[in-house]
Each structure stands twice: as C-alpha cells, then as structure tokens.
Length: 557
Image (cartoon, rainbow, N blue to C red; front, side, top):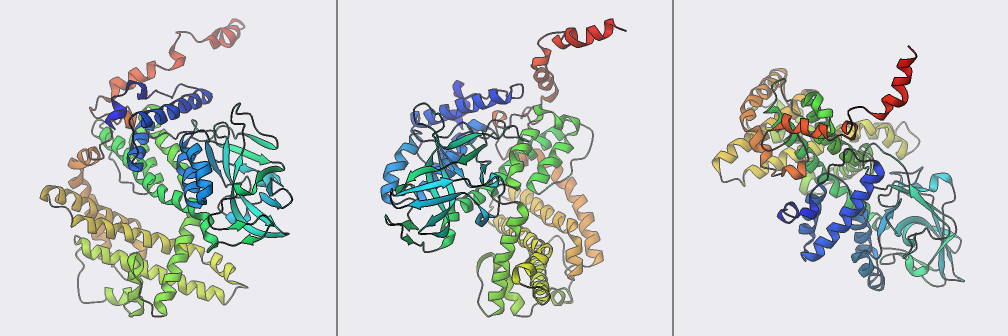
C-alpha cells in the first residue's frame, strides 16, 4: 500500500470529467504502469500483488483484469505441461494479453446452451471455430473489445461427427505486432454500460477461424491427431475458472460494502440531518449507504456511485444471484437426502443431521424455557433451526410437486421460490455462526465488547427483517419478536459512538476511497466545493452553447 501511495506516478486521477475513451486510455496506461512497478519492486507473492493492484485501482476495474484473474489461472489449471511451457511465459510477460470468452449474446448462466462450435479437422489437425448464429456471438468479456490479442474461447467440441460438449480453446484474435484483428475474427467494444467505463467489454464473432489441435486445453479432455476423443475424469472440470471467479465475488462484496459503509458512516458524523439506517446485503447495502448521505451521495464526488456501478455486475456475472442460490439449494437438497438416508454430514450442513434425530424447530421452541435474545449462542441456534425448517419445507414441497409434474426439472422449477428461501436462510445461518465463532478469538476486552455488540446487532436485525420465518416455525413467539425490534433500536444507540472507529478499522486511505464525503479528516464541504469547480463546464464563465442556441433564441423574443 505504501509503495502505491508514495509513488508520484501511481497517484489517482479524477476520472469524473473525462470521456469514456479518455477513461479507457487512462486505465490502460495505469495497467501497464502497474505491471512495470510490480516488476521493479520484485513483488512475486500473489496476495501482495493483489493488494498492490487494488490500492492502485481504488474501486475501479482494469482492462487487463481478466488477463490476470481468468486467462492466466485457466492456463495454469487446464493446460498440459507442454502447453504451459508454450503459453504461460508469454502470458506472464504480457506478450500475450488474454481474456476469457464464455458468455454469449443469447446465453449467460446456462452454460450448456452455448452455441459457439469448434469442429476438429483431422486432415490438417486443426479446430475450426465458428459463431453459427447471432446469439452465439461472444458478448461481455472484459478486455475483449480493444485490449486482448488472445482469448480462451469456450465452445462445443465436434469430432468424428459427434458433439462432446463444452471445451476451452486458446484462440489468437489480433496480430501480435500490429494488433489488427486476424482473418475471420470480428471483434470490438460493446459500447457504454451502467458502469465499468474503463473496461472494454467486447464482442467476438468467429468465422471459420482455424487453430492448431494443441490449442485445445488438454490437461483433462483430449482429442488425438486422428480425432479420437478422450473424456475427462469429470465434465465439471471445464467450469473450474467460473467457480474460482464466483469465490472471488464473495471477497469483492465485503470490500465494496465496507468502503460504502466507511464513506456513509464518516459523513454521518459530519452532517446533521437524518439517522443512518443499517444495510447488510452488499448491493442493497451500498445503495442504502448512498441514500443515507442524502443528495450528496448521488454526486460522483462521494465515490458511492462508482462503488455501486462497479459492484452491481457482481449480482449477475458468473450467474445471476437467483441461479447461484438455486445451485446452493441443490447442494442443500442433496445433503438433506444424504442425512435422511443415515449419512453423517459435516461442515456447514451438519445441522441437517438433527432433522434425522427428530429434533424439530417446533419441539425445541416448546421447551419450558425463555430465550434470552441477548445470548448470541441462542441466536445462532435460532438461525440454525430456521435454516433446517426451510430446507425441510423445500424438500417436502419438492416431493409434493414431483407427484404432480411430468419430470424432476419441472418439479424443481415449481419449488424454486422455496428453494431460494432455504438457500438464503442457510447462508444467513453460516454468517451468524462464523461471526459468533470469531468472537472467541478476541483477547482484548474492549474490542470484544464492541464486536460482540455488533454481532448481536447483526443477528437481531436479521431476525427483525425475517420475523415471519421465526414465527412460522415456532422458534420465537410474538413477544420475543417485539423484544427483538426494541433491542435493535437500543443497539443502534450503543453502536453509534463507535461507528466511525469501526469503519476506520478497515484502514482505507483517502486515496483508495476517492470520496469527498468519506474523507478521514472530515473536511467534507470545502473539498466538495473545490471538486465542483474542476468541472469542464466551469472552464469559462459563459458556455459556448449560450452563443450558439440561447442568444439567438433571445434575440427573437
């Protein structure tokens, strides 16, 4: 972090007054500069490289992002040793700049429906790649439009007259010297988006583009010179890169929300207008932080619009959130079925074992006891019972639908609302459980006191927002829910004096937050005025449009 903040070449530019083309130009310049600085400082640890780049980029995305996050990791994990020798050094040194071309114009999270084809020609030992339809055009990959000269293309493999499913191919798309598109390659930028102005998300249409047989990533599946197909140990190995990126989204969610909270809470200590309300889910939480800052939160100077538009695609790329929740639900349903058959479950789904021991939420709630809503361990148990109840209810409803439907897929789709609810409850339980578990590792009494209060607030706020689930399952009663609502209001007052210190603990420098409202020193309004004066519209006292349009109009009155 210090290497970035103390380096004059890496100081952040204010991009708010630049055109999209200018923003892209600045971003490419910074990406190249980051690579050079990483080499100069001999930074080799992957985690150190990640933090160096994040400090350089603030909350922005770089045009080379997919080269480092998806292209290289895919080569490292899916290439043979011979392929690694050929491709990795060129990629590490940015001779090859790559992207990951999976999503198509007509196909997002339904991976099996991708239409791009790679047909093997044994006479030349080449694959012929084609985009046979408009909907098969690759669409959205970052860095594809103008930056990359290679792409890992996911395509349906055809050999010996048979389709063998989705496989990955290294496809050169631009000449190494001139950067001109290669024959048969139609490539470009998809145009302005809600955010990501610095990134050239692109399209790619392939028209009989030939690549050598060795350009198929063959660590697992293989095509022999004569076209014989050797299947991989598991069909799911092709999706490894996508799963890796999904895991990164979790970390990005926490970082984006922590930055938004830092800005909103610091500014709440400066302005005197309205109460800051709690917001917990990343995208909704960022928007709640923006609204909590009043009208100034809408200004680009606050930094919040950039955080929001940069993070928002995380709700849809690598699978829209509902799709992701249904995948989690499929795992929960499988685990529930295993538990019912007598298998002992471990890890985050171990609580489903209790269902087979006939410990039902209603039975637990009817015990002669009064739950102490200030006891975090009891709240963890309440969340566990809620998750178990909703998982079992979803499984029961699925079996009922199965009796009315033609096939399992229809029954699953008909139960999707219940499955998403069960998935959400499971995730909520895991977060509360892990938060509570981490408290036991804190040795400083003062810090423990603050964080345990925050944990209690998080758990109770979740109950207040989902009280129907806890009431319906008999986990809590009406009186306890009323106590929860009251306690949440009390805890807001308890946490408020420590709110600024809590977000200060994230340790975001002003240069990284890039927010006038979230400044560490609290000098908000002076800097907001200075920021506004830098607008290009303020370069002249009278804008040229006055002479072109308004003055002629006035002369006719």
